[in-house]
Amino acid sequence: MIRECWSPSLRRPTAPHFRVTPVQGHLGSGTPRFRDTPVQGHPGSGTPRFRDTPVQGHPGSGTPRFRDTPLSPNNAVHHSTTAPSCSLCGSMPIGGCPSRAAFLPTATLGHRSPRHHTLVRGGSRPSPTFSARTRFPTRAVVAMASPPPSPITFVTGNANKLSEVQAILSTGDPPLVITSKALDLPELQGTPAAIAEAKARAAVEAVGGPVLVEDTSLAFSALGGLPGPYIKWFLEALGVDRLGTLLAAHEDKSAHAVCTFAYCGGVGQPVTVLEGRTPGVIVEPRGETRFGWDPVFQPDEGGGRTYAEMPAAAKNAISHRGRALAKVRAFLHTGGGGGGSDDS
Ligand SMILES: O=c1nc[nH]c2c1ncn2[C@H]1C[C@H](O)[C@@H](COP(=O)(O)OP(=O)(O)OP(=O)(O)O)O1
Ligand SMILES: [Mg+2]
Image (cartoon, rainbow, N blue to C red; front, top):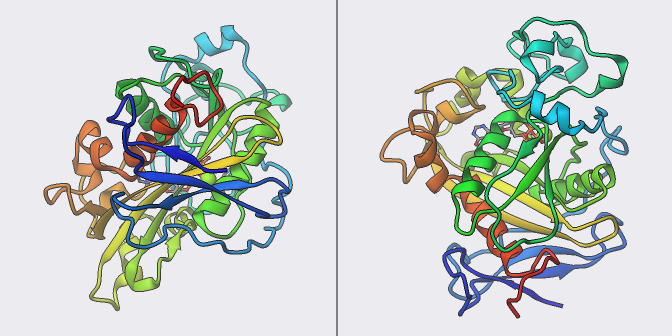
């Protein structure tokens, strides 16, 4: 079986730009996954973007590290304000609602850096039910076009990711409706595609319906692609100011940001993986320290600015996340997600 995806700019596709090809026997899942296989004429199709690399189970990966409790509609309204989040990586601490926010011990979150999750506005500790780490706006509803699969839930523990995804999907053509759920899913070691797929499988078990997840990498050319999907831990260990020291001994400061989305329509259904990437260089930090490694990543197409120096819309227009979401939108709106598209 081959599914085909088209450029998002084409409402009625006329020419396939890439194919989403099933791959068997990945991670012992028993069901095929799909990988995004470059074909003729697709930008960046010169080399395969995914490699099938066996992934070993990561200790403790079998279960989510944090539990979450579904919010009632009332809660969703109550939490409609912006939740506090880690100023460095965007992770959201317990109590996304400012009126109920509380401190969460750094160790509980697996964050070793004291700069993470230390500032959370007042309120008491949540009830034991909320051993999950966060509450945050759980409704990311935007205008609905031709409905892809019923509500798609974007599962992430990162408030900054969520807001970028909301902004991109709501302004895109066609717009896409998503809801969201704050869960910190287990992350395996392996390729970005393998990690994203495993996150999707964990997410679909937790949500029970169509889910979208993503995993973000920052790959340094001089280091053979590392930190890659492990950037989160390097960022936490070094802080954004010292991230560049990893390249101190190298002249080549080039890097690329990669966003790997994985979509799964339901429990037991195949996972589709779609990737966006943006090339750039690692520089001394410049701009607002708001989201992860934005201050040290200067995209080649950014006019000399770092991501952190760019307005949100400018970043989204060329970002790894924007590019990946363009593919996600095209995939879903051409019936790839199993929803009611008439494109055949
Ligand atoms: O556009 C971005 N600009 C700057 N930094 C970024 C970006 N996107 C992700 N990041 C950071 C967040 C995390 O430190 C690491 C990715 O790790 P990653 O596991 O994908 O994210 P996460 O754990 O925060 O959220 P999630 O619950 O969706 O896995 O890079
Ligand atoms: Mg993560």
